[in-house]
Image 1 (cartoon, each protein chain N blue to C red):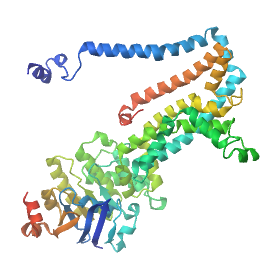
Image 2 (spheres, helix red, strand yellow; image 1 turned 180 degrees about the vertical axis):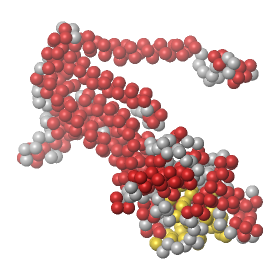
Image 3 (spheres, each protein chain N blue to C red; image 1 turned 60 degrees about the horizontal axis):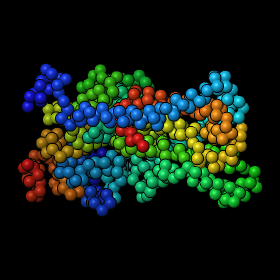
Image 4 (cartoon, rainbow over the protein chains, first blue to last red; image 1 turned 45 degrees about the horizontal axis):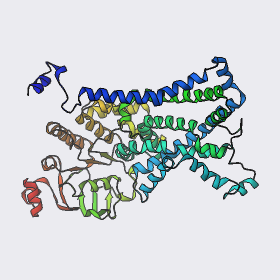
Length: 294
Length: 239
C-alpha cells in the first residue's frame, strides 16, 4: 500500500519499483553474460581483422586493396549488388503486397517459398544453378550454342546473389504491410485514386522506412554472400572473384595482409550499413516498431 | 435519383453475411443501418461503397447500375470507423487527396484546392488545422477530417461505417449533430451504419433494423419504435 501510494503521488518517484521487475543481481549477471559474449564472439574478431590488415603498415594495406585483382573483386561485388538489390526490391514489394493485402489460395505456400533461401544452404542454391545452367544441366548446351555465359560469369553470380537475398525485402515488408491493413488503400479507392496512384501516394510512403531498412540489409548480404556465389563463380582471379571469394583466395595463398585488408574493406561496408541502420532505427523507431525482425 | 437496394446477398466462405437485403431510400435521404454485430450492416455498406463484391442482387442509384462500377468511379464518400486517414499526410493533404488524384482536365487548380480545404475545415469546425498530422489530432478531430476528406470529392453518396464507434459519448453527440447539419447542407444521400439505436434514431430519416443478413424492419424512426414488426426488433429496441 505504502509503495503504491508513494509512487502514485509522485513524492518519491525513485522509490517506485515496477512490481514485475527482476532483482538487480540478475539484471547485472545477464548483462555481463551478454556483453562478454558479444565481446569475445563479435567485437574481438572484428578488431583482429583490422589489426591483421594493418600488421605491415598502412602502405601495405593500401597496396593490397588497390592492386588490380582486388579492385576487380570490389567492382564485381558492387555490380552484382547493384543488379540484385533493385530486382529484389521490386520482387519483394510485389510479393509482400500480394501476401499482405490479398487472400488467395496457396498464400501460405508462397510465404514458405519466400523463406526458402533462408532455410536452404547457400551452397545448395549455388548448385541448383549449376544443375540448370551448367554444361550437364538443362539449358547449358543451348546457352553455350548461343554463346551466352551464365555460369562462371556475371549472370550466374547475380542469379545466385538474388536467390540468397530474396527474402530480405519481402520478409521485412509482409508484417509491416499486414499490420497496416487495407484501410488507407480502400479510402484512396473511394476517393477516386487508381491502383498505381494508390500505390505511389499511399502504400509506398507508408512502407518507405521499412523498405529502406530492408534494402540496406539485403545489400549487406549481397556484398557478403560467399557460399552460393562460390559455386557458380569459377574463381577466375580478376574476373569472377567477388570480394569474399577474393579474401578466401588470398588467405589460401598465405597472403594474410592482402586477405585481411580486403576483409577489412568488407567489414567497413558492413559497419557503414550498421550505422545507417541504427540511424534509421533511432530516427523512425515508431514506424519500425511494427516490423518483425529475423 | 433514389437508391434502390434489391435482394443483395454475400457469403464469406460458407458464412452468409447478407441474405437478400433490400431497401429503397429517396434522393438526399439519411438511412441508418442498425443491428447487432454480425448482422451484415457493414458488409452492405461496403458493397454500396464498392469495397466488397455482392454475390447476387442489384443496386440502382441515380439510374446507374451501381454494382457494375468500380469504387473509384462511384464517387461515394466513405468514412471508416478507424478513420483510415493517410498518416504520412497533413490534414490539408488528406482532404485534398480526392481532388489531386483526379485526371488533369477535371483537377481543380492549386488555389481552388486550397480554398476548398479551408472551406471544408470550416464546415467540419476545425478551421486552421491544415498543417497538422493525423497523429496530432484527437479521435473526434480525426473523424471530422475523415468526413471533410469524403466530402471534398462532392460525393453522390456518403457512406459511414460506425464512424463514431471509437469515440466517447460527449464527442459522439456533438459529431452526430454536426453530421446531420452537414448532410442537410450538402443534400447527399447518406447511409450510416451503427449498432447504437439511440444514435440511429436521433440522426436518420429512415432506419433499417438488420438481423442475420436481412432487413427485419425498415421505416421512419418513430414508426419503427411505435410498431416493432418482429419480436427481434422490439427486443433489440428495448435494450
